[in-house]
Amino acid sequence: MAAPAASPVDNRSANTQTMTIGKALNNGLRAAMEADPKVLVMGEDVGKLGGVFRVTDGLQKDFGEHRVLDTPLAESGIVGTAIGLAVRGFRPVCEIQFEGFIFPAFDQISSQLAKLRYRTQGKLKAPVVIRVPFGGGIGAVEHHSESPESLFSHIPGLKVVSCANPVDAYWMMQQAISSDDPVMLFEPKKLYHSSALKAPVDTTATPDPLHSSRVVRHGDAATIAAYGPSLPVALDAATAAQEEGRNLEVIDLRTLSPLDLGPVFESVRRTGRLVVVSEASSEVSLASEVAARVQQECFYSLEAPVQRVTGFDTPYPPAKLEEHFLPDLDRVLHAVDNALEW
Image (cartoon, rainbow, N blue to C red):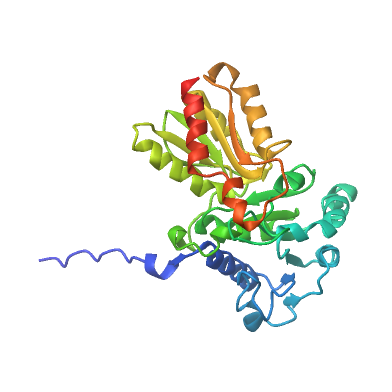
Protein backbone atom coordinates (compact mmCIF):
# COMPACT_ATOMS: atom_id res chain seq x y z
CA MET A 1 0.00 0.00 0.00
CA ALA A 2 1.30 3.39 -0.92
CA ALA A 3 2.09 5.74 1.92
CA PRO A 4 -0.44 8.53 2.39
CA ALA A 5 0.50 11.85 0.88
CA ALA A 6 2.16 14.21 3.28
CA SER A 7 -0.05 17.01 4.56
CA PRO A 8 0.97 20.48 3.39
CA VAL A 9 3.00 22.37 5.98
CA ASP A 10 0.92 25.01 7.76
CA ASN A 11 3.20 28.00 8.34
CA ARG A 12 0.36 30.16 9.57
CA SER A 13 1.39 29.99 13.21
CA ALA A 14 4.97 30.91 12.37
CA ASN A 15 4.03 33.83 10.13
CA THR A 16 0.89 35.04 11.92
CA GLN A 17 0.72 36.85 15.22
CA THR A 18 -2.27 38.29 17.02
CA MET A 19 -1.64 41.97 17.66
CA THR A 20 -3.24 45.19 18.79
CA ILE A 21 -2.94 48.20 16.49
CA GLY A 22 -0.16 49.61 18.66
CA LYS A 23 1.80 46.37 18.55
CA ALA A 24 1.27 46.07 14.81
CA LEU A 25 2.67 49.56 14.26
CA ASN A 26 5.67 48.64 16.41
CA ASN A 27 6.23 45.43 14.45
CA GLY A 28 5.84 47.27 11.15
CA LEU A 29 8.50 49.75 12.20
CA ARG A 30 10.74 46.93 13.35
CA ALA A 31 10.36 45.07 10.03
CA ALA A 32 11.21 48.20 8.05
CA MET A 33 14.26 48.92 10.21
CA GLU A 34 15.51 45.37 9.85
CA ALA A 35 15.09 45.51 6.07
CA ASP A 36 16.79 48.88 5.54
CA PRO A 37 19.54 50.39 7.74
CA LYS A 38 18.64 53.83 6.37
CA VAL A 39 15.32 53.83 8.25
CA LEU A 40 15.52 56.05 11.33
CA VAL A 41 12.97 56.80 14.05
CA MET A 42 12.93 60.21 15.70
CA GLY A 43 10.71 62.16 18.03
CA GLU A 44 10.02 63.21 21.59
CA ASP A 45 10.47 60.31 24.05
CA VAL A 46 10.48 57.66 21.32
CA GLY A 47 13.67 56.04 22.54
CA LYS A 48 14.17 55.18 26.20
CA LEU A 49 10.48 55.66 27.03
CA GLY A 50 9.23 53.93 23.89
CA GLY A 51 6.80 56.76 23.12
CA VAL A 52 3.97 57.96 25.32
CA PHE A 53 1.77 55.28 23.72
CA ARG A 54 4.61 52.72 23.65
CA VAL A 55 4.44 52.35 19.88
CA THR A 56 8.24 52.57 19.62
CA ASP A 57 8.85 50.42 22.70
CA GLY A 58 12.07 48.39 22.54
CA LEU A 59 13.31 49.85 19.25
CA GLN A 60 16.13 51.94 20.71
CA LYS A 61 17.29 48.97 22.79
CA ASP A 62 17.45 46.76 19.70
CA PHE A 63 18.66 49.24 17.05
CA GLY A 64 20.66 51.73 19.09
CA GLU A 65 20.54 55.44 19.79
CA HIS A 66 21.96 56.26 16.35
CA ARG A 67 18.78 54.92 14.70
CA VAL A 68 16.12 55.73 17.32
CA LEU A 69 16.67 59.31 18.36
CA ASP A 70 15.10 61.16 21.28
CA THR A 71 14.73 64.74 20.08
CA PRO A 72 14.21 68.08 21.80
CA LEU A 73 10.63 69.34 22.19
CA ALA A 74 10.68 71.11 18.83
CA GLU A 75 8.39 69.78 16.12
CA SER A 76 9.71 72.13 13.46
CA GLY A 77 13.22 70.90 14.26
CA ILE A 78 12.12 67.26 14.09
CA VAL A 79 10.58 67.64 10.63
CA GLY A 80 13.30 70.00 9.36
CA THR A 81 16.00 67.55 10.40
CA ALA A 82 14.06 64.71 8.77
CA ILE A 83 13.95 66.61 5.47
CA GLY A 84 17.73 67.02 5.54
CA LEU A 85 18.21 63.35 6.36
CA ALA A 86 15.90 62.33 3.51
CA VAL A 87 17.91 64.42 1.04
CA ARG A 88 20.99 62.54 2.21
CA GLY A 89 19.43 59.14 1.51
CA PHE A 90 17.84 58.21 4.82
CA ARG A 91 14.21 57.29 5.43
CA PRO A 92 13.25 59.05 8.66
CA VAL A 93 10.06 58.27 10.56
CA CYS A 94 9.00 61.19 12.73
CA GLU A 95 6.58 60.89 15.63
CA ILE A 96 4.46 63.89 16.56
CA GLN A 97 3.61 63.05 20.15
CA PHE A 98 0.03 64.39 19.93
CA GLU A 99 -1.75 65.82 16.90
CA GLY A 100 -2.24 69.20 18.58
CA PHE A 101 1.54 69.66 18.76
CA ILE A 102 2.03 69.46 15.00
CA PHE A 103 1.44 73.10 14.13
CA PRO A 104 4.93 74.43 14.93
CA ALA A 105 6.01 72.11 12.10
CA PHE A 106 3.21 73.14 9.72
CA ASP A 107 5.48 75.41 7.68
CA GLN A 108 8.16 72.75 7.35
CA ILE A 109 5.56 70.20 6.26
CA SER A 110 3.55 72.36 3.87
CA SER A 111 6.22 74.69 2.43
CA GLN A 112 9.25 72.41 2.37
CA LEU A 113 8.51 68.70 2.70
CA ALA A 114 5.41 68.63 0.47
CA LYS A 115 7.09 70.69 -2.26
CA LEU A 116 10.56 69.14 -2.38
CA ARG A 117 10.08 66.66 -5.24
CA TYR A 118 8.03 69.14 -7.28
CA ARG A 119 10.46 71.99 -6.69
CA THR A 120 13.43 69.89 -7.85
CA GLN A 121 11.54 68.24 -10.74
CA GLY A 122 12.06 64.86 -9.13
CA LYS A 123 15.82 65.22 -8.64
CA LEU A 124 15.35 65.00 -4.88
CA LYS A 125 13.12 62.53 -3.08
CA ALA A 126 11.28 63.10 0.17
CA PRO A 127 10.87 59.68 1.85
CA VAL A 128 9.69 61.05 5.20
CA VAL A 129 6.94 59.46 7.28
CA ILE A 130 5.18 61.59 9.89
CA ARG A 131 3.28 59.54 12.45
CA VAL A 132 0.40 61.42 14.04
CA PRO A 133 -1.62 59.95 16.92
CA PHE A 134 -5.00 61.65 16.47
CA GLY A 135 -8.59 61.77 17.61
CA GLY A 136 -10.35 61.69 20.95
CA GLY A 137 -11.65 59.13 23.37
CA ILE A 138 -8.77 59.07 25.86
CA GLY A 139 -9.95 61.75 28.30
CA ALA A 140 -7.03 64.07 27.57
CA VAL A 141 -6.59 67.79 28.08
CA GLU A 142 -6.61 70.52 25.43
CA HIS A 143 -4.55 69.91 22.25
CA HIS A 144 -4.42 66.16 22.81
CA SER A 145 -7.61 64.95 21.05
CA GLU A 146 -7.94 66.83 17.80
CA SER A 147 -8.48 65.70 14.21
CA PRO A 148 -6.48 67.94 11.82
CA GLU A 149 -6.26 65.44 8.96
CA SER A 150 -8.31 67.60 6.57
CA LEU A 151 -5.71 70.38 6.80
CA PHE A 152 -2.93 68.12 5.58
CA SER A 153 -5.08 66.30 3.02
CA HIS A 154 -5.54 69.69 1.36
CA ILE A 155 -1.79 70.13 0.72
CA PRO A 156 -0.57 68.92 -2.70
CA GLY A 157 2.53 66.78 -2.43
CA LEU A 158 1.55 65.01 0.78
CA LYS A 159 0.06 61.55 1.00
CA VAL A 160 -2.25 60.99 3.97
CA VAL A 161 -3.49 57.62 5.26
CA SER A 162 -5.13 56.27 8.40
CA CYS A 163 -5.25 52.75 9.81
CA ALA A 164 -8.17 51.23 11.74
CA ASN A 165 -7.06 47.63 12.32
CA PRO A 166 -3.83 45.75 13.10
CA VAL A 167 -3.35 44.36 9.58
CA ASP A 168 -3.43 47.82 8.02
CA ALA A 169 -1.29 49.24 10.83
CA TYR A 170 1.44 46.66 10.17
CA TRP A 171 1.50 47.05 6.40
CA MET A 172 0.72 50.75 6.09
CA MET A 173 3.74 51.57 8.21
CA GLN A 174 6.06 49.65 5.92
CA GLN A 175 4.40 50.91 2.73
CA ALA A 176 4.65 54.50 3.94
CA ILE A 177 8.34 54.08 4.77
CA SER A 178 9.07 52.61 1.34
CA SER A 179 7.41 55.56 -0.45
CA ASP A 180 9.64 58.20 -2.03
CA ASP A 181 6.94 60.78 -1.30
CA PRO A 182 6.17 62.14 2.18
CA VAL A 183 3.42 60.19 3.92
CA MET A 184 1.46 61.26 6.98
CA LEU A 185 0.12 58.27 8.91
CA PHE A 186 -2.75 59.28 11.18
CA GLU A 187 -3.02 56.68 13.94
CA PRO A 188 -6.23 56.49 16.04
CA LYS A 189 -4.81 56.75 19.53
CA LYS A 190 -7.87 55.45 21.36
CA LEU A 191 -7.60 52.20 19.37
CA TYR A 192 -3.88 51.58 19.98
CA HIS A 193 -4.35 49.01 22.73
CA SER A 194 -7.98 47.97 22.24
CA SER A 195 -8.27 44.27 23.00
CA ALA A 196 -11.53 44.19 21.02
CA LEU A 197 -9.58 45.02 17.86
CA LYS A 198 -6.83 42.43 18.32
CA ALA A 199 -6.45 40.46 15.11
CA PRO A 200 -4.10 37.96 13.47
CA VAL A 201 -1.53 39.58 11.20
CA ASP A 202 0.11 37.43 8.55
CA THR A 203 3.53 38.97 8.07
CA THR A 204 4.01 37.18 4.74
CA ALA A 205 0.68 38.18 3.17
CA THR A 206 0.33 40.49 0.19
CA PRO A 207 -1.16 43.74 1.54
CA ASP A 208 -3.74 45.91 -0.14
CA PRO A 209 -2.26 48.88 -2.00
CA LEU A 210 -1.56 51.79 0.34
CA HIS A 211 -3.86 54.22 -1.42
CA SER A 212 -7.05 52.18 -1.66
CA SER A 213 -10.32 52.07 0.23
CA ARG A 214 -11.96 48.79 1.17
CA VAL A 215 -15.45 47.39 1.75
CA VAL A 216 -15.30 45.85 5.23
CA ARG A 217 -18.96 44.87 5.52
CA HIS A 218 -21.41 44.19 2.70
CA GLY A 219 -24.98 45.41 2.63
CA ASP A 220 -27.63 46.91 0.38
CA ALA A 221 -29.76 49.29 2.48
CA ALA A 222 -27.29 52.18 2.83
CA THR A 223 -23.55 52.86 2.73
CA ILE A 224 -21.43 54.13 5.61
CA ALA A 225 -17.97 55.54 4.84
CA ALA A 226 -15.54 56.07 7.72
CA TYR A 227 -11.86 55.92 8.61
CA GLY A 228 -9.55 55.66 11.59
CA PRO A 229 -11.26 55.98 14.99
CA SER A 230 -14.72 56.27 13.41
CA LEU A 231 -14.62 52.89 11.68
CA PRO A 232 -15.52 50.81 14.79
CA VAL A 233 -18.49 53.13 15.37
CA ALA A 234 -19.65 52.56 11.80
CA LEU A 235 -19.32 48.80 12.18
CA ASP A 236 -21.20 48.85 15.49
CA ALA A 237 -23.98 50.80 13.78
CA ALA A 238 -24.16 48.20 11.01
CA THR A 239 -24.42 45.43 13.60
CA ALA A 240 -27.22 47.25 15.42
CA ALA A 241 -29.06 47.94 12.17
CA GLN A 242 -28.79 44.27 11.22
CA GLU A 243 -30.89 43.41 14.27
CA GLU A 244 -33.64 45.59 12.77
CA GLY A 245 -33.38 43.93 9.38
CA ARG A 246 -31.32 46.62 7.64
CA ASN A 247 -28.10 45.56 5.94
CA LEU A 248 -25.61 48.43 5.88
CA GLU A 249 -22.46 48.42 3.77
CA VAL A 250 -19.39 49.82 5.53
CA ILE A 251 -16.35 51.17 3.69
CA ASP A 252 -13.02 51.97 5.32
CA LEU A 253 -11.63 54.90 3.35
CA ARG A 254 -8.05 54.16 4.58
CA THR A 255 -6.48 56.73 2.25
CA LEU A 256 -7.38 60.38 2.80
CA SER A 257 -5.13 61.90 0.15
CA PRO A 258 -5.41 60.74 -2.52
CA LEU A 259 -8.99 59.64 -1.83
CA ASP A 260 -9.99 56.35 -3.41
CA LEU A 261 -13.72 56.81 -3.85
CA GLY A 262 -14.28 54.16 -6.51
CA PRO A 263 -15.65 51.60 -4.03
CA VAL A 264 -17.82 54.31 -2.47
CA PHE A 265 -19.31 55.26 -5.84
CA GLU A 266 -19.97 51.62 -6.67
CA SER A 267 -21.64 51.04 -3.32
CA VAL A 268 -23.82 54.15 -3.45
CA ARG A 269 -25.00 53.27 -6.94
CA ARG A 270 -26.42 50.08 -5.38
CA THR A 271 -27.68 51.40 -2.04
CA GLY A 272 -28.74 54.92 -3.05
CA ARG A 273 -27.77 56.31 0.36
CA LEU A 274 -24.57 57.40 2.07
CA VAL A 275 -23.59 58.35 5.62
CA VAL A 276 -20.05 59.69 6.19
CA VAL A 277 -18.64 59.40 9.72
CA SER A 278 -15.62 61.32 11.04
CA GLU A 279 -14.48 62.81 14.35
CA ALA A 280 -13.27 65.99 12.63
CA SER A 281 -15.44 69.08 12.42
CA SER A 282 -17.81 69.02 9.47
CA GLU A 283 -17.14 72.30 7.67
CA VAL A 284 -14.54 72.15 4.87
CA SER A 285 -13.65 68.59 5.87
CA LEU A 286 -12.95 65.19 4.35
CA ALA A 287 -16.58 64.34 5.07
CA SER A 288 -17.58 67.39 3.01
CA GLU A 289 -15.35 66.29 0.13
CA VAL A 290 -16.71 62.74 0.12
CA ALA A 291 -20.28 64.09 0.15
CA ALA A 292 -19.56 66.51 -2.70
CA ARG A 293 -17.82 63.92 -4.87
CA VAL A 294 -20.56 61.33 -4.35
CA GLN A 295 -23.28 63.82 -5.24
CA GLN A 296 -21.28 64.79 -8.32
CA GLU A 297 -20.65 61.23 -9.52
CA CYS A 298 -23.76 59.42 -8.25
CA PHE A 299 -26.48 62.06 -8.38
CA TYR A 300 -28.99 59.96 -10.31
CA SER A 301 -28.44 56.99 -7.99
CA LEU A 302 -29.03 58.86 -4.75
CA GLU A 303 -32.35 58.34 -3.00
CA ALA A 304 -31.51 60.82 -0.23
CA PRO A 305 -29.01 63.61 0.48
CA VAL A 306 -25.65 62.46 1.80
CA GLN A 307 -25.65 62.53 5.61
CA ARG A 308 -22.61 63.56 7.67
CA VAL A 309 -21.97 62.51 11.27
CA THR A 310 -18.95 64.39 12.59
CA GLY A 311 -17.50 66.29 15.48
CA PHE A 312 -19.00 69.72 15.99
CA ASP A 313 -17.61 72.99 14.62
CA THR A 314 -16.19 73.97 17.98
CA PRO A 315 -12.85 73.53 19.73
CA TYR A 316 -12.49 70.07 21.21
CA PRO A 317 -14.25 70.09 24.59
CA PRO A 318 -12.97 69.15 28.05
CA ALA A 319 -12.72 65.41 28.69
CA LYS A 320 -16.00 65.21 30.62
CA LEU A 321 -17.87 66.39 27.52
CA GLU A 322 -16.07 64.49 24.77
CA GLU A 323 -18.62 61.68 24.66
CA HIS A 324 -21.16 64.27 23.52
CA PHE A 325 -18.77 65.62 20.88
CA LEU A 326 -17.65 62.40 19.22
CA PRO A 327 -19.85 60.53 16.73
CA ASP A 328 -21.51 57.62 18.52
CA LEU A 329 -23.84 54.76 17.75
CA ASP A 330 -27.04 56.76 18.26
CA ARG A 331 -25.95 59.63 16.02
CA VAL A 332 -24.90 57.28 13.23
CA LEU A 333 -28.14 55.30 13.41
CA HIS A 334 -30.13 58.54 13.44
CA ALA A 335 -28.37 59.59 10.22
CA VAL A 336 -29.15 56.18 8.69
CA ASP A 337 -32.79 56.61 9.68
CA ASN A 338 -32.86 60.04 8.03
CA ALA A 339 -31.42 58.61 4.83
CA LEU A 340 -33.84 55.68 4.74
CA GLU A 341 -36.88 57.79 5.52
CA TRP A 342 -36.21 60.38 2.83
